[in-house]
Image 1: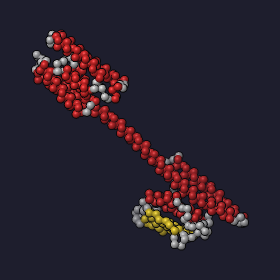
Image 2: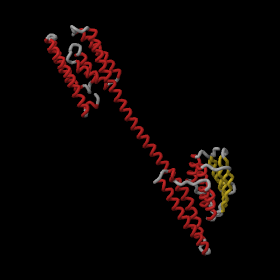
Image 3: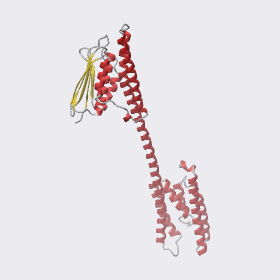
Image 4: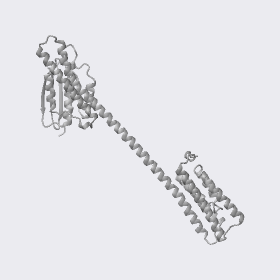
Length: 380
């Protein structure tokens, strides 16, 4: 039994009532025509025909639950009953709507057989039997075909709704993935930008801590650098968080030209750092931005894990050959090991380089220092 049959909605009730009235109206019209024309069958057959018509119309209320069974019963009654034809056509239509095309064709074949039997049992004096059979076959085929068309249309509508729902789900998933990528970008930017600034603060604050008797001018100079670095860190943080209010593409991004400023800033903070640039041509924005982040992360790690070490930065490349970035530092002046503690920053850096389709290498040197090298594609 179809589960939806016991839960008719207002539209279903309206359709059922309309079909019942049409079937009853057909039977009533045929009865009036037979009486007026005087072409009545034997009384017993006419009475049986009327009973079959009434029962057939009443049985239409069960058509949603047992469409095939009801259609077979009404087809059997239609072999002798003329007044049940309206209910029988409604039953054929219901089979076409609610059952598979194969079942609809089988029931239609039975309807053709019932039309042949009716033409033999109740022939029309003025209508050839062949014409009567052809008319019945055509009308019954039209009802089954109409039902199949309705079924196909309903399935098409359901398919379109499912497709729209899937498209909406996919769009939501894509939006969530885009949001996730944006959050990852924010995390990388915050790590790169704030890590660099805070490491400068740490260097100068440490110098003040370990040199309590430093000359006043050195203390003033260190305090000035700390204040400027803290102010710049806040500015950088505002720019990074600005991505939450604006598209990611609108976030100010560094370029290759900013590498010089980055190295100079580290030198002013007391690092022994030198830059050697050997590039031929203007570096693309994407490659330049990745280069800046590589140098920034390397300098930050050198300040944190190799204080007092000498750092060298070399950038070389040309269109078609790619861009090589190499940062190395000597052994730290203190007791710490070079590169100790580096983890999340290098992992994020490796992800950046991989997204740029480049290569990244890093590790300690034989002399006790640390080396970080990357290659980035630079198309001609």
